[in-house]
Image 1 (cartoon, rainbow, N blue to C red):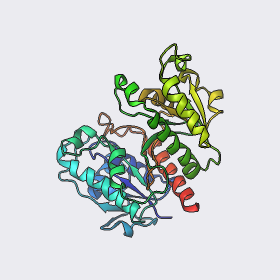
Image 2 (cartoon, rainbow, N blue to C red):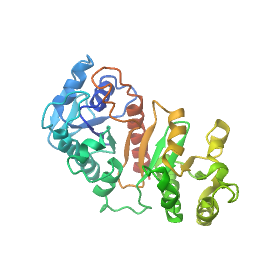
Image 3 (cartoon, rainbow, N blue to C red):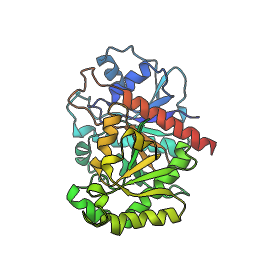
Image 4 (cartoon, one colour):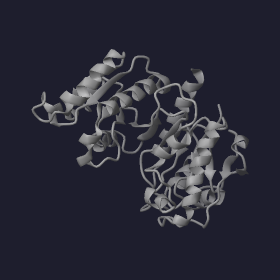
Length: 334
């Protein structure tokens, strides 16, 4: 298989440090190349005291290989980065790195894309126009052929738990209005297909969270479960998807409960993020389901407060690389 593409993220954050760490100690990591600024990558490694790699700057993603040299698809910064001090002047390079990474996968030069963290507030100064990575990548692949239910759906995953989100960065007061039957149906279809296609689960079991305390107690504590969530679940079961009715989220994520399903669908952000970060704070992975390309990301931000200090942990980036590689292997075998 082709190596993975890794977009550099915000150069003032910890992303390039993580790439330098993992390349210096590649045990267990799949092959990857960087889409970003080669000099910035070398500076990140030097700040960590890492040996300088055998660097090969390439002009085309097709030139990347899995040899001993570290390949960088050169995407230059406008100015040299300062760790911990993001500069909007470099926003264009950050955006270009994502777009070139997507193109590398689209063109068959990379098996998947792993995105290092960006700062949305910085990118918006460059008229980015998208809430984040997920929506931008969905836009870039919107015209690509895809015979399955199209996402994106955000899933956070680790060895002990996979949880997808029906709503993502929606203010809590707006969640009930956003939580339509169609949204529940769409999310579950994407998750069920992805579990089969990308995770090798032949007969996926999905647990569906309720919105209200105690999953509404038959309408006594809110009507969303009775009017929206459970009717959607019934329709999905009619389509052959093994999914529960709304279950009380407070009893859904302990060890015994997790044995009863392959993935859970949370209805709002913190309902899903709290359990995944409790179980996988250091090694959780953000995955975009239902897209023509494979995209994973570390489940953390830019870490501006620790950038350049040599204390950032690469566990989540390593896990994102491994998960993207495993997903690519399964798609290649299909």
